[in-house]
Amino acid sequence: MNKMCARYLALAMLGAALASCSLSSGTSAGQKAIRSVAVRVGGPSSSGARSIISDTNVSAVNVAVFDGSTYGLVGYGKLSKQAEYWGGAISLSSLPATAVFEATAIGSSGTEIYYGSASSTTLSGDGGDVVTVGMIEGSGIWTFAPQSLSQTGGYPCVASSADGQQLATVESTGHNIFTSSYLNGLWENMTQGTSASGLSWQDLVSSMDGSHLAAIESTNDDIWTSTDYGVTWTDQTTSGSSKNSAAHGLSWEKLASSADGTRLAAVVGSGDVWTSADSGLTWVDRTASGPKSWISVASSSSGARLAAVVNGGDVWTSSDYGATWTDRTPSGAAHSLYWTNIVSSADGSHLAAQEFSNKDIWTSSDYGATWTDRTSSGAAHGLLWFSFASSADGSRLAASDMTNIWTSCDFGQTWTNQASSLGTGNGIMWSLALSADGRSLIAGPANGKIYIGTVN
Image (tube, rainbow, N blue to C red; front, side, top):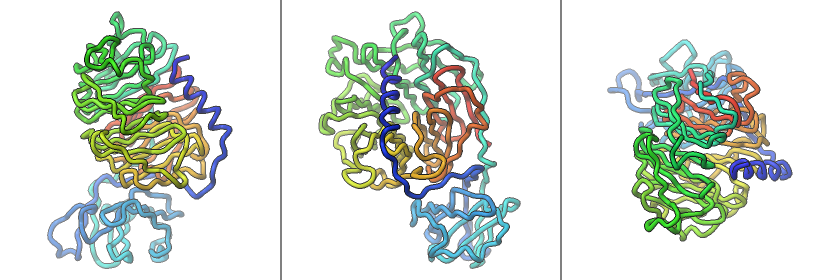
């Protein structure tokens, strides 16, 4: 059993024994989300259409749509980032009882509500203003297709380029790294017959274009990198290295990469956070963060904003490439939890994390300053969350428990179980990766075939 398997087994047993909380949350199937919306303020005579998020006269647009019997307005915009409206100050009594909302915008006064039906792309408001939907997504239903790569073991790590066309994975039988291009279903063993073969790979990350890859392994406890789409690999922390001798033999847990692959971050269990500014050639121990039981790390696209979680501790963030760190959960409900995974949007503003204490998923929309338990009740509560992935804007998330893949298209506020789309008998989904737009998903199971999922 490799370190990753042992770690999750131990956490699973611990999580099953810990008490869980009961707040308010919800899950929703068949969600729809607005990909782009424009608004004209002041009625038909207004000049031009502008982005609803940046327009000063509109404070929010919903990103979650429920069925016609339940109205849920989830605000997201310039003035009310991720504020939730469930009636209260904003009355829903004037809305048509049979409407199926494709989009909703809330005026800056908090009293204007714009709405539309599934058959219309023009949304009328009570003030005579017009909101125009640029693109409406489909039903939010995922479809999954198995890939030809099938090993007797599993796939503890998967990585994807921004467009979802360049994929990489490691398998736990021959302990090799495989890559696939342009979703052609063909996978190539990139490390067989090399010094990088036969290692117990633990994590794998990719640059935006898929050219730069980085991986950690627990056989020698080293970090390896590739700058040619995985064709060749270099052990950057090998024993005796004049550049990174201090980084050899550490209990590496997780990696994170900037969009161009030049800036990397890695965390050590019962150790420190390390960073690299040259695609892994040299590494710096960020001892200012202090030795802790680090277990996961996430990076913004620039690499400047980092977020990391401590197993049995707190969520920490850095805005200066890891030079200094701030404890974001020193008290409160999110303090001292058994965190296991964290993911970040491209700008670092939206974070999401999994934990085993309550077996829940938490999100933050303010760079980690405040946190909300999104699965404190309902079907997605109390699950043994195993892996995590985020789209570039943070709106789309994918998570796997011990059995199923769950997805969210509203920044983690509601979750849909994709069991009916994926099928059964796949075992634990060890690893997940999303494309930048969150519409393509690669899933690596503990046994069987890799799956590629797409959403309509």
